[in-house]
Image (spheres, rainbow over the protein chains, first blue to last red):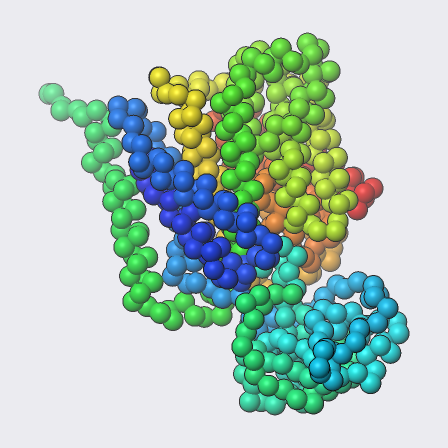
Length: 234
Length: 330
């Protein structure tokens, strides 16, 4: 394997830095890391691209060249993946791989109740994560008699209907945990990965033999397709 | 019979493609793939792998840049003779001082190997240099902050990493004073820097070299993490993770094979959500102390005889100390 010489290393750094800036400059970075990371990414992109550019502009003549490490070629890999594959945020395929165990959640909700209805509406918008926590709380009465609005993408359910789904991330998409709420009577017109708004009433968690653990469930009153949010992770 | 013999460089030059040509071809290929083949990579498994791969790389890059910049600053601005004067003469005392000095000297493990090599050359007792070698990449502020970011709400993980890695450095340093032999070392000569190069140029060159080197290994780590997360059936991982002994052994082996930079490894560890915290601590303690990349670097800097003895001993000590600390703190 030809080892990258000095010029090649500079071009590789410049490419990487520019691509990082392109991704962090738009909402695309939200598909991979948390929103708070934007300044760090922008800073890193500027430094990496700047190093490459400075090296290219200042070619030193007469200095003995040491070729760089062969592993340096791999800097082209993230550039290639971002430009050619341009992967979107994780979706129903990844969620479907996580069905073997329920996500680990805090034992009890920290707040006293789920809060008042949304302004001017007769429902309360909750994150899927909060819905999970409340439906598994020792006293789930806070959900009783309330209309709940959940937003997520559709992922297939073996036991009928589908799940409204979001990923919860700690720091980046590599640690994503799928949070699912079963919509047992979900209509088949909604395809996997389609973003939906589900308004309905809380139903008791059920254990389906195909799943093996109790699943938070919502009885949908209305379901409609919505555009995907910029930040798809919770 | 006379044979026309070319100098080695010229002979090699004929057989080898110039890297800039290779780069131009690569860029052309990217452009073609980008514009000519939309939808070619739309299989869900490819998309999911790519998302996780990019996520690990992006998440770790700022920390890698920070660490490389700081280590370049130190190697440019602080003369190695300073460390020789600052350390106590008795090896048994120099070991803890050098180990703790690792806290204030940020750098990833690729940077600390040459620094440790230059310490030994300048007369620092090898035991202390080795304690520094093991401590610096594992417990410096950049790595601890990265660990805190990767494990939000779990400060005990940061404390456990600090305690276990410092413990490994001290144990290995003292072990060397008891059983180490000077003849195991065969120190390589340093690469002479360009004459007349200013400090700014040396700083930039060092940083660029370290970034290309460590960045390449980060990509290897990101690809491995994505492969583990996306291609390996989740039920396998969960079966391995369910057995405490197996989980520790597998993650220790993974740390050795993946060779992720210490500034980035916390994010990979955080992604291994089905494993216990103790097993993930083993991953974080073993990784900066012994991995395939470090073994290669150590063999290059200190000689093969040293690396073949030091790496297995460090692996055993690292797993033992990490499990012990994990039992107490996590």
